[in-house]
Length: 377
Image 1: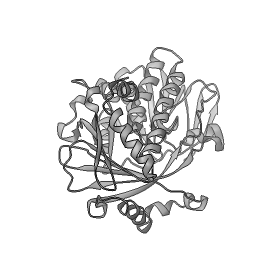
Image 2 (image 1 turned 90 degrees about the vertical axis):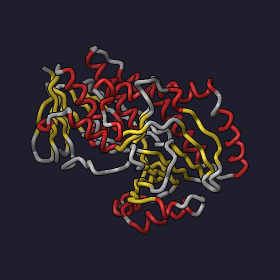
Image 3 (image 1 turned 180 degrees about the horizontal axis):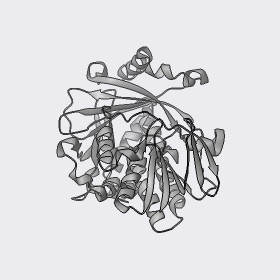
């Protein structure tokens, strides 16, 4: 029986473990650097039909109905005056079993953990070295080491696996943007609301049937090296408040009174595609490639990538990286374009952008190419 090491207990790693549990052709262990998984974090994720179809293979359709929501539209607004620009019907890419879904990330993690024996997850496992011998030997900071036939690196955008393999080239780059996440009160729209402003945008969407809503904003912000290396900066209430005030000052939406439990994260993206020379090491999720978050495909692509990898191993194929690069390029180009279009500040550019949005939002050919090829793959 082949042994697999999964590095990282995030969405991609835990879903991959669920697939292995269904098959039992491999033995596996999950190594997580943290000392536990936070199941109290309330921020949300969006998942399109492409990932829901895959999740249903492991029983996702049996999730408690009150823990998920199925928005049907994305409503676009001008943040300055709250004028509605247009809307896109995302339900056209659904079918009865696979629908665009929003929920708390912690609820998805809980669902994954139900199917994984606790003795297969090893916390406080800080990977420090990888040695290619007869098999691949992993060495951890606690001085333990173990050999495996396959390594699946699902340890996020700052993947330690990637840094060991590629040194400084494995580090991501700062995207000159910061994400603010939180909960929002007194909001009624059951669809996704997207507010566009100069050098920022924010999104509000329901994350369950209990009238809880997720807030996430992306704001452009250049930082010097000293600021980026100061992790305490992103926990500083004054710094966070200043960012929120910058958005509020350019929007009629009263964020100060509505947003709660706000957290701040610098956004990092991958510099290029990197493929390990060893054929039995696989990068998945953000460890493979991290793109801007403006297309809401992070969770979906983590799930889709893990599924592609599992199928590759099952079929003794070697198409994983080829398929992933093709799909990731599609996501990355759309994410980058959205980020640019959402943050326009010149009034004339905004005027023409809004005209294009109104037209394209009702153009079936465009929507099928821009969204359908991603949502229904």
